[in-house]
Each structure stands twice: as C-alpha cells, then as structure tokens.
Image (tube, rainbow, N blue to C red; front, top):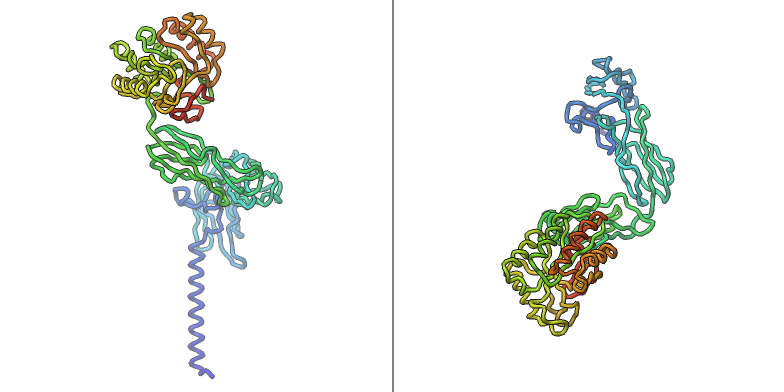
Length: 488
C-alpha cells in the first residue's frame, strides 16, 4: 500500500505532466495555425513566404473562407476592418472589398489580402495522357493575379481518374475523363485526360546522335501502343556538354559526350548518347529542315573565270555547293584564290584526284593523297568528300578515299552539250528533295545555266546546299569509302 504522501506526490506529478502536455499542444497548434488554410494548386501552403510579402493568403472579393476550428473548441474572431473583410462567430471570413486587413482568430492574427474577383482561369494543361497508377497535379491559376486558392476540381469519370482539391489526379483505369476546375465565382476551365496502361518500356528516336557545337536536336520519346506516362523525367549526365529540357530538346553547349536519360513515372528508362563536336566550316546550321534541298556539285575545276561566276550567284541566293577539285588546277594564283574564297564562304571542298589522268582501277592511292595535300597546302583545309573521275570505282578508291564517295542522281551532261538552256532544263525539270546534281564549273555555259537555275529553284522553295549539309539535314551519316547517289 502506498502512503498518503506518496499518493499526493504522484498526483502532483500527474498534474504537472498534464499542464506540460497542454502547453506543448498549444505550441504545436500555434506553430501550425495555418496548416488548414487555403493551399496552392500544387498543395503547398499559400503563405507570406510564397507571396513575397506579409500576407498570409489572398482572397477574391466575394469569396468566403471558413477558418478551421477544432471540434468543441470555442474561438473568438474579429476583423480589424470590416470594410475589407467580415468574420462571423463560426470563423466564416468574407472578402468585401480590395485591400489588406488583419483578422484575429483566438490568440492568432492573420494578414489577409483581398484582390479583385477572378475574371478567368487557366490550367497548366488542356489535354494529356496518363498511365494507370500515375499521379499528377494539374495546376490552376488566374492570369495576372495573385489569386491562387479555393479552386474546385471535378471529374466526369471517376472510374478512370480521381482528383482531390489540391488538383492531384490519380489514374485508376483505362478510359477517358474530363476535369473541370472552377473558382468560387464560377470561372471555369477544362482538361481532357486519357488513361492508358503503365509503360512496359520506353525508347528514344535515336540511340546515338552527333551534334555540332551550338546546335539543338529534338529527342522524341516513344512508348508502346496503349501505354502512357504524363511525367517523363529527362536528364543529362553531363550538362557541361549538353542540356535537355522537359520536352526533349537537346542543346549542345561544349565539345564532348553526354548521355540523355528518360524515366517514366513507373521507372522505365532509355538513354541516348550525344557526341558534340565543333561545326565544320562548310555546314550551315540555320537552314530550314522542313524545306526541300538539292545539292549542287561541280567537277574538274576550278576555272577562276566561270567558277567565280557560280560562287557569285550561290552567295547572292544563300546557296552552297561541293566542288570536286582537280589538284593540279590549284597551282595558278587565280584558281588558288578561288579555292580560298570557297573556304572563306563555307563551300565544301571535294577531291577529284590530282590530275584527272587516271580512271577506275588506274587510280592510285597517291592520285588521291596528292590532291588532298595540295588543297590543304593552298587553303589550310582538307577535302571532306571524294568523287572518282568519270564515276568509275575500284577497291583502291574505296579504301583510300578521303571521305564518302559522292556520285549523283541527276547528270546535266553539261560537258557534252555545252548548252546553257539544256543544262538549265535538266536541273529545273528533274530536281527533287535529296538529289545530288552533277555539273562542271570549268564551262562558261554551265555558269550561264547556274545563274538562271539558282534563282528559279530558290523561288520554287528549294534550298541549294552542299553534300555535307544535305546529309546533316536529312540526319544521315556519310561513311568514308561508301558510295552515295542521293541523300533522302
């Protein structure tokens, strides 16, 4: 049996513990007094920290907010400016007119900003797809307003999608639904949602991609038929080399390599290796990939007189070309100046052997190398493509070419006709997207034809490019020693 003194001591300790518990509970309530106040569309508290001022939350004129009161708890409420907000004994706060006001709720004081009633409402999405089991918060906002609370969310098909009052959607089953979001004064906006299966895999439109420094590339994300994932997290493992945005647009910012990874909401992943290199002088990256392109190519030059005329018209019409140069023609001052003009203005140099004396199996590795060495000596640039004399091939040519072997899909026969009208007609009547057109810049008649054909093709919507540019915009990699007739 405990003594009376012991019982008194225990009772006193119990009373002290109860008082401490009440004090702690009061402190917790005090520290969390706005835990049930209006929230932003993403579920975060609409607090002074979010708004950047001393306002605890914003209301629109005419809006009513019920201050949370614990069951059975009695609180006194008071508005310090009833012209801005009123509050009744139950804690119903009504916004009357614009301004700022302080409201007392028990021992707490709340700073409220009252702004104009919303005139419209917008959503972060108008339509999208989700995978079963996926969660996504649909964000609502009022244009040009701080109002961001009190939105009402409803769905038309709760069997497919559910939504809570923070805008968090949960995909439950395959099907379609529509979410309607409203403000207290009945401004509404809608979003259509299609629910598919959770992804079983994911992939990109490319596993590897070469980019030039300063350019961009659009990665497309592919999911199996019937699958969906609204949230697809894209990251670069080397942002110093390239960055990627949420839509898959890759931006090459430095030379090197990086891996872009995508992850679906349920953890399926895919990767694309990006290699960034310095852009060659002969590739322009500001052309329109949606417009048709033809590559102009010229053999046997240069001949300064006619070649410069061709360069003039190409430059005047934002065109380019590949010049397959015979090495020994670079010896004269006029022709070497012509080659340097090509390099300066971004035309592609090609190798057409050193002296054009050998064909097919007669062509030696030295015929090719001597031309490349000469062009580098004259211009500081090596040729990046090869065209065999007469178009004849051999194993030696394929094994020693200084780049891809470029033949043609349109032969103007300018060497045979020496007729400008004939050459012009063959270009205009036959050119289509991806074609490689063969000409010879040593003939004045060819220059005459080109001076007419370039503006005519441009007016028809064609972009006149060199072979390397054609491959770049068609997303084709031209391999050294491989033969190409066109690029599509």
